[in-house]
Length: 400
Image 1 (tube, rainbow, N blue to C red):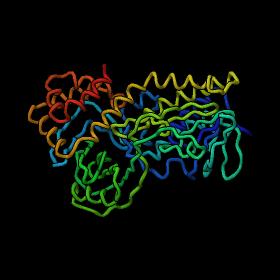
Image 2 (image 1 turned 45 degrees about the horizontal axis):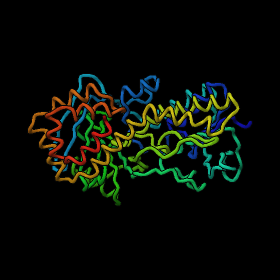
Image 3 (image 1 turned 180 degrees about the vertical axis):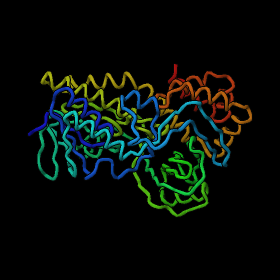
Image 4 (image 1 turned 135 degrees about the horizontal axis):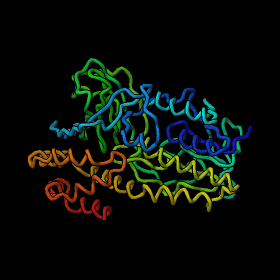
């Protein structure tokens, strides 16, 4: 049976959009190129406690592996600041199991999953998306939600450039037999192994970690081996998965006649960390609600679907722009400047101030934390010394 709505991609954004549409009373199919939902798994798998709450996702030991209370931020020279809260700030999740958990709930809501179904091309006629092809076969739902992930290959193949930028490659591996604090995530900066991004150590338990990095440079696997050697004294990796990390701004346009973009493909991602599950999921729900409204009215033209643009940009546009500006500021910092910044924070004994900001802040909507940081005279003084007046002024201008 021809679906009334089709979603491309069975990641969290695609599944959540499909669930909303199906619950709205319309037949919905999700087209996923891989034979198993959630595989291959190339996500770091750290989701905020508040973020899962905003998405309305019930917690389950089916996908939760650990609870994290804070973290350590390392400068390139190996010095670090530790921030620890009294309550859990994030969950370490198995993303494959997490995605399948969402898919099971979507199936219960009536969503049908078409696995091993790689969408080849979107079909446009006079500016309206009229469906797509899968292995040459034409599919013509009334409305399409594109949640394919970062890069936007489908629109690009149709001659439409979305303006997406800042796509890096991320690498992940799991390492056992190590000693770590199971309550703390580690974030390591340094161009040697994580050019224009950072490396991470995410504890699964006391002796097992998920370790990875994102980089704008080449040789990612060798960089990861180098980082693991530095951190744990080992260089043999049991297996590495790679995927795209979005660190750019939102795309120029996320709504077209007959088509909505949601998730990483729309740049609905925290550019500071590359995390897109929560922000992308929130926007995907809005895409689903817009699709329900459009299908109910029998109007899938841009005039109707542009409501999606108004809603998600109104709610999250400023947040996304602020986090992108912060990412650009970090990218411009040399290793020497970052060493100086961290040393300045430690010399000024500001770890307690930072910890208080983080405990009251939102991991997913970070503009509030950034705003408070630049309003604190002691922090502002250290930031000015570390990043410079011009760079910090660009960030502050977005917070007014």
